[in-house]
Image 1 (cartoon, each protein chain N blue to C red):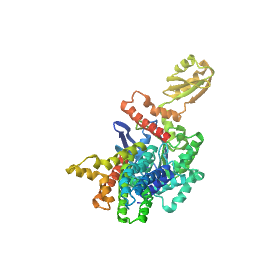
Image 2 (image 1 turned 180 degrees about the vertical axis):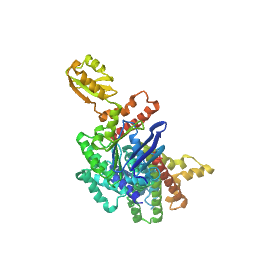
Image 3 (image 1 turned 90 degrees about the vertical axis):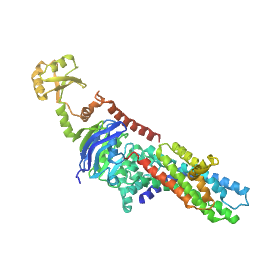
Image 4 (image 1 turned 120 degrees about the horizontal axis):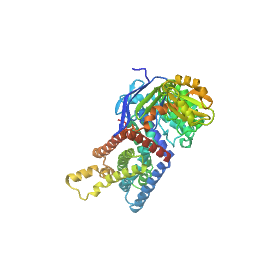
Length: 236
Length: 344
């Protein structure tokens, strides 16, 4: 456990020592903020975070991979991964530490959006329960995208490749239920099951269903295990 | 349990069809400083990567401090310090923070971390650089940081992959001194193709070529073997070298080969079955010599000569396609890594 924490701490230090984290945080806040306040003034009678929670997943599909793109790619490129892997730490500990660092950074970004619901609550009667569920959903979705991004980062030495691959996967998973028009039968179930946005919509409505939570956790688990295997592939 | 620090038995490593190591075996005793020599692509880095648990051996067994690298990978990794080629470091970190991170991961007890950082800083001459960002450091200081991270947890065994490559002569001497002082209490195996380094630092030399052991012994032992294998006399004459001198030498009893060597005087390397016999014959025949004899000595078994002797096959026609491909593969990989680290 300690070692996971040490890896996370180092990654967070690296995030906040480089411009990447700040650019990602600011861009995310500017874009979601602009859209939020735009819809805020258009539908001033509606005291709800739905607009924000509807749009955030799309941006997250880009921002989460931006946060994770360098986690393994830069270490592969510089050779530091080799050194790290010859230290007494398991591959899964390395992966978990990096994943948690990305999650913490996303958490910080989400915390910085709290003024939006706060403003709404001053103006009217805001359903804080739904807002809380929405934020939990954002963390789960962010976690799933970050795990996908981490996996993509572990495949390559090139950050650009990492972000493009991860973004493509995230975007595909986000859009899949809309790509297939009028799905029916088994197809519909499959498409809905693998779609990140389908699960997110349920949560954003304020319904924290176990099925949705299990979906995100399994995406995260699968990607982290796969990442662990991916970085260990050279070992045995 | 074994008393050997490092045991390598029949190590074979293939990269796909390419064979980088073929049944390599050697042992290193505790406290020894071993120089690991070989041309590019000989399998030095591959061996070291297997010892550190980064790569797996296709066949064979490697043990460090009595523990199997395969079965007790994590326990082995606690006992070794490793400095990879090209010294990969987290460029954006401050030296002190980096060493702290390594101390944490390497399992140095919390209370001892600060002491250890100061201690390795002192040992590697980094004390005044602890507050610097790694990317600002010169190559020599980067190397010191690399050494510092490798010894921060007081490992039993140190594995250094070309620790002096790319340094200027002064830095090389400094890093060697650091290695020597660390080596007083630890087992060290380090690879190099700088031959003087081995004479300066090592107790023992292991030479490998194309994944196979070609020589193993102390410097003196290898020199002895060299003189057994290739006896030779350096004979120098007054004035310019000429055909009549060569003919004169070739006519001496027992001489099998005469080669001209460059020198201030007309010098020849004389190879014979029995050096002493030639020596006597030469002195007896001195009066008949076309020129005055000014030099007569045993040819030195320099490390370069040993190296060339033991690895001479590399360029020879004996090299099968597969083998040269193996050498090339590793070489390419090294180059690629070098290029990339230069880019980053």
